[in-house]
Image (tube, rainbow, N blue to C red; front, side):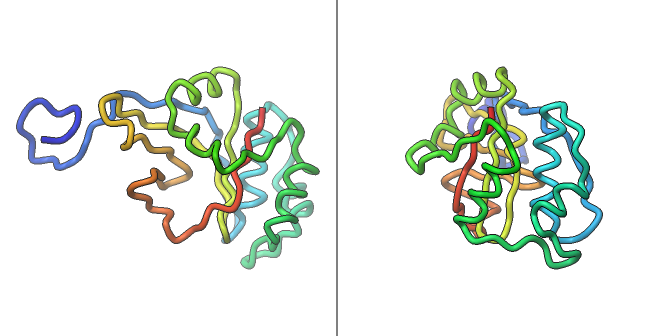
Length: 165
């Protein structure tokens, strides 16, 4: 028997209790490997700003088909220079992303969580909450999900998480 399933089922999956939506707008990428400018534009759109994709492509040094190249430190500098009201979260704070109360409060305030992986960046779109099995709570980023037990992003090492408020 899986969590939140009180009847027999052929579906071998757990059922979430609810989803916290961060209302991140979708921005279509024009080119491959354009996650840095695209995710920056999503942040701007969420905030009601009107920057263009071309602006973020230029600011991030984006090269068509190759992407934007940053060291860990230079990406932190990029985030602080290109976005306002941003803070880099400490590693001990990462667990907050799986805490429904913390995330619900952040979503109500319009906060954004931006994850910098080695070789990729993404914005947290949702938190799926399993009330009776909190270890199953998972954040949804782009087309994938992440939790501490089973991640489709295991190939990406998290370098930084930014909180934008």
